[in-house]
Length: 92
Image (cartoon, rainbow, N blue to C red; front, side, top):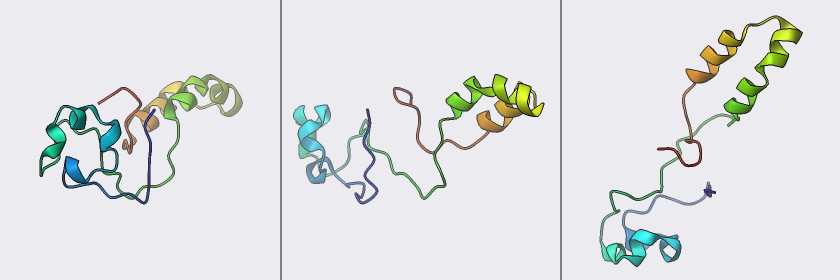
Protein backbone atom coordinates (compact mmCIF):
# COMPACT_ATOMS: atom_id res chain seq x y z
CA UNK A 1 0.00 0.00 0.00
CA UNK A 2 1.24 3.50 -0.77
CA UNK A 3 1.35 6.41 1.64
CA UNK A 4 0.22 9.93 0.86
CA UNK A 5 1.68 12.72 2.95
CA UNK A 6 0.25 16.11 1.92
CA UNK A 7 2.85 17.94 4.01
CA UNK A 8 5.95 16.30 2.51
CA UNK A 9 7.85 17.77 -0.40
CA UNK A 10 9.40 15.68 -3.15
CA UNK A 11 13.12 15.38 -2.31
CA UNK A 12 15.76 16.45 -4.85
CA UNK A 13 18.02 13.51 -3.96
CA UNK A 14 17.87 10.08 -2.39
CA UNK A 15 20.14 11.28 0.42
CA UNK A 16 17.54 13.86 1.49
CA UNK A 17 14.56 11.50 1.28
CA UNK A 18 12.60 10.80 4.46
CA UNK A 19 11.72 7.31 3.12
CA UNK A 20 15.32 6.26 2.44
CA UNK A 21 15.44 3.68 5.26
CA UNK A 22 12.58 1.75 3.64
CA UNK A 23 13.78 2.20 0.05
CA UNK A 24 15.39 -0.65 -1.89
CA UNK A 25 17.19 1.81 -4.18
CA UNK A 26 18.79 3.54 -1.20
CA UNK A 27 19.87 0.23 0.28
CA UNK A 28 21.59 -0.63 -3.01
CA UNK A 29 23.90 2.36 -2.43
CA UNK A 30 22.07 4.48 -4.97
CA UNK A 31 21.01 6.71 -2.09
CA UNK A 32 24.34 8.44 -1.86
CA UNK A 33 23.49 10.23 -5.11
CA UNK A 34 22.87 13.96 -5.19
CA UNK A 35 19.98 13.31 -7.59
CA UNK A 36 16.74 11.37 -7.37
CA UNK A 37 17.02 7.93 -8.98
CA UNK A 38 15.16 7.49 -12.29
CA UNK A 39 13.20 4.58 -10.79
CA UNK A 40 12.18 6.50 -7.67
CA UNK A 41 8.62 5.46 -6.75
CA UNK A 42 7.75 8.87 -5.28
CA UNK A 43 5.45 11.03 -7.37
CA UNK A 44 4.29 14.59 -7.04
CA UNK A 45 0.57 14.90 -6.42
CA UNK A 46 -0.68 18.14 -7.88
CA UNK A 47 -3.61 19.97 -6.30
CA UNK A 48 -6.77 18.03 -7.12
CA UNK A 49 -10.39 17.57 -6.30
CA UNK A 50 -12.05 14.67 -4.60
CA UNK A 51 -10.53 11.23 -5.25
CA UNK A 52 -13.00 8.44 -5.88
CA UNK A 53 -12.87 4.72 -6.61
CA UNK A 54 -14.08 4.74 -10.22
CA UNK A 55 -13.82 0.94 -10.44
CA UNK A 56 -16.37 0.59 -7.64
CA UNK A 57 -18.79 2.86 -9.50
CA UNK A 58 -18.34 0.88 -12.72
CA UNK A 59 -18.98 -2.36 -10.83
CA UNK A 60 -22.18 -0.90 -9.39
CA UNK A 61 -23.34 0.65 -12.66
CA UNK A 62 -25.91 -2.11 -13.11
CA UNK A 63 -27.82 -0.61 -10.17
CA UNK A 64 -27.72 2.85 -11.77
CA UNK A 65 -29.14 1.46 -15.00
CA UNK A 66 -32.13 0.01 -13.15
CA UNK A 67 -32.67 3.04 -10.90
CA UNK A 68 -32.01 5.95 -13.24
CA UNK A 69 -32.23 4.57 -16.76
CA UNK A 70 -28.65 5.52 -17.72
CA UNK A 71 -26.86 2.93 -19.74
CA UNK A 72 -23.54 1.44 -18.67
CA UNK A 73 -21.68 3.06 -21.58
CA UNK A 74 -22.62 6.49 -20.20
CA UNK A 75 -20.84 5.78 -16.90
CA UNK A 76 -17.90 3.98 -18.51
CA UNK A 77 -17.26 6.87 -20.91
CA UNK A 78 -17.28 9.51 -18.19
CA UNK A 79 -15.13 7.54 -15.73
CA UNK A 80 -12.62 6.15 -18.23
CA UNK A 81 -11.99 9.61 -19.69
CA UNK A 82 -11.60 11.29 -16.30
CA UNK A 83 -8.04 12.41 -15.48
CA UNK A 84 -6.04 10.08 -13.25
CA UNK A 85 -4.70 11.78 -10.14
CA UNK A 86 -3.07 8.79 -8.46
CA UNK A 87 -2.60 5.49 -10.33
CA UNK A 88 -4.15 2.33 -8.94
CA UNK A 89 -1.91 0.23 -6.70
CA UNK A 90 0.49 -1.93 -8.70
CA UNK A 91 0.13 0.00 -11.97
CA UNK A 92 2.47 2.45 -13.66
